[in-house]
Length: 186
Image (tube, rainbow, N blue to C red; front, top):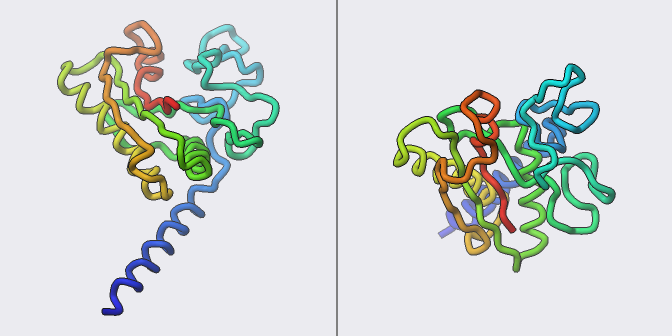
């Protein structure tokens, strides 16, 4: 039957179209939650007020050898940016983090023997059960994005931690925003 080759070609074409659409340069290399970069890279504005960035966490900043457009290390090392953030009560991937996901997908494609654990997290609002489910849904959203990019399911493991491992302590919008995340753990 001729349908299978046609379906396969269609799937390849759709994958390439998605990949081409994800090659924007939006967002920031530091993985800031608002898609902007601060001039000093410290996460503190010129007024001395923290803007909620997680620089210094080992996931942000730039390093020599880093491509300026994708967050991918030029020499094939693990991408510098490995954290993406989510809106409140949402598992939808924000467009400013698509370049981060694309860089990590590229690394995984080029290194077929590498495995990654996608660690989903939430802020402390909501019940424990709801937060566990939401954190897993967030990680599954990233897993689905990687699958569309051609990453083998055998390379990816999903874990939902809920509110159990906060990146920032506190009961304010800034802390909550830093805790709503998925981390690539290579």
